[in-house]
Amino acid sequence: MKQLVLDLGAEAPAQSLDTFQVGANAELTHLMHQFAQRASREHFAYLWGDTGAGKTHLLQGLAATPASRYIAADAPSEEFVFTPEITLYLLDDCNLLSPQAQIDAFALFNQIREHGAYMVSTGPVPPAVLPVREDLRTRMGWGLIYLIHGLSDDEKIAALTQAAEARGLTLSASVLPYLLSHFKRDMRSL
Image 1 (spheres, rainbow, N blue to C red):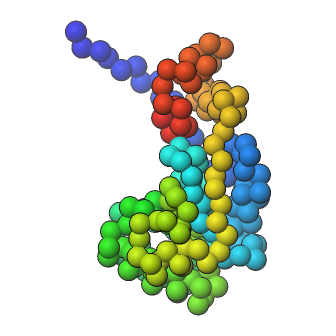
Image 2 (image 1 turned 30 degrees about the vertical axis):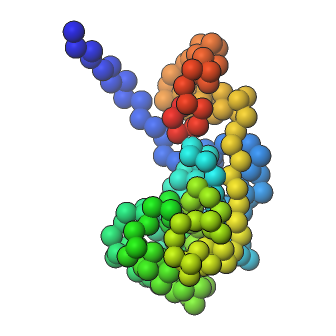
C-alpha cells in the first residue's frame, strides 16, 4: 500500500525577528533588533546554543533586512568577499566551515572591522572551543557572545501552536504534549 501525502499548501512563514520565540533571550532579542537597524555599539556578535535553539532563525530574520548577506558554512568563496554595499554579514554554523572557508571568513572579519560593518556568527559551542583555526576563533570572540537559551515546555507548546495557526491548522490540546514526550524536543525537530 502506498501512502499519499495530502498537500495542504501550508507553507512555513518566513523566519523573522518577530517570529522568534524570546523565552529567556530578551537581551539577545533586543541586541538583534539593534543589529537589524545597525544601531548597536558592538559590531560583532557570536551566538551559540543547542540545535534548534534559534540561531539560524535569528540569522534568517536579520537576512531579511536591507543590505545584509546570509552566508552558510558551505557557501562558495565569493560569498565571503566583503562588499561595501553590504553592512551586515551573517555567518551560520561556523563549526562546519571548510579549511578554505575558514581562511575566507578570517579575511572577511578583518574587512568588516576595517569598514565598520556588522557581523553575527553562530555555532554550537562558544568560540573558545570552536573547532576552527585559532586566528578565526579569536575574531569570533571580538564582540558579544550569547548563549541562546532553549524554550521551556510551555514556551515550546505556545510556539508550536502559533506556528500551526500561521499555517491555518488547529491542533487539539493533547497533540503538543504528546509530541514533547515522544519525539526529539528541539524546536527544529518539532
